[in-house]
Length: 225
Image 1: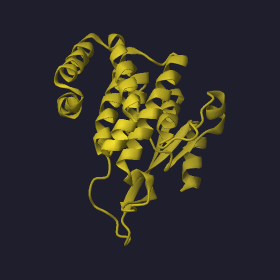
Image 2: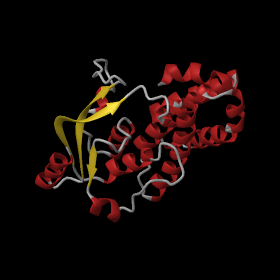
Image 3: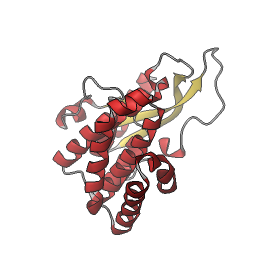
């Protein structure tokens, strides 16, 4: 599979190549259910906001090959010591890449049903993703990538990540309350950078949560997802 991804990069002079994949369970029988959204396989657009969204829905390093020269030139690496550390790496890689090419063959098998995998722990994933979104925010600012469209996409990511904290135990929710509140305040402060219509949308959501209480985040965010 790596040979085909390498050939695709070299032939097209792309910065990233990626392939299709299938899931299998512990038996291992290939699963037939849908494993990702249509955005996973959608060719990324050219704007920074479109690249952000594409990276967000495909924020895994497996099934891809990255041109080392591009990573070095743009000083891209994993955030050490964090869960879901490939999340900001892939998004930023998509945003700096001049070309992303698809190998439309199933070259990767992804095992599901392993309860020991970190992705099976929704609580740890929620905490890790929110930490990485804060890091991603600083990187987007430093690289002058924080356009109005990217601001909207980033806020949306924060809101939905905060919602995932409902999967934590009461003790862990209290333990990471500062992380949630910090992310929420930062997202609220960035609303003014969004397109006008989206500003209205986010002000309404944040206003409803402020009025109804923190526990209403998930209920209201489903209306704005």
